[in-house]
Length: 255
Image (cartoon, rainbow, N blue to C red; front, side):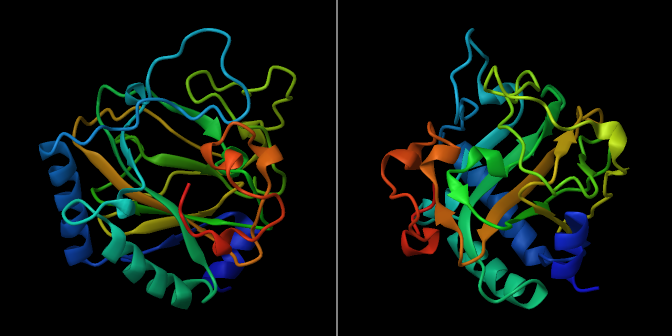
């Protein structure tokens, strides 16, 4: 079965050496530059549906993260690498995908576990599928905070999750996911390996018990038929400026 076929059938597929060693070194350098320049990290989880009723800690409780580094100019930018990755995905998946967003992320020993969630409920987008490309920049295994995936859990769109509590952001939303109903995998990855998963695949990560860095570069790719739908994530920043029903690729500025 093709990579795209496996992604659509199982919700997750592993692609070895999607990034070459030079790519990995360049991404390591991006981390170093962002830290050296004191570029602020993402400080809060995006509450795209409802604000929590009580204060929550910042996102630094879960990860060290920089959102959309490809929008930077010069050192620390992932723009060139994102373009290269797009060319590779055109071969691995389909030629028509376009980048929606990317993230540089590191999980250290002091970070908390990330609860089960899907990515797509956080987006103000109606799309039949999306590919999230999770590229390892360090060796990754379960003990190092590796990501666990529920195979075949992408059939239904669930609620946006409060990533500090594991509960739906909306108090009246049901939690349709139970991990025991699915086969769970936690891929062992070398630097440059990637897990490509469906935007609706449920996934989580545990604590990094090893104490060594677990850096990753994560990008989201959409098919050309993806359309804006602000009602799906009313508090998302882009929901204030986009027109419902218009094609996302016509407004390429990432969210």
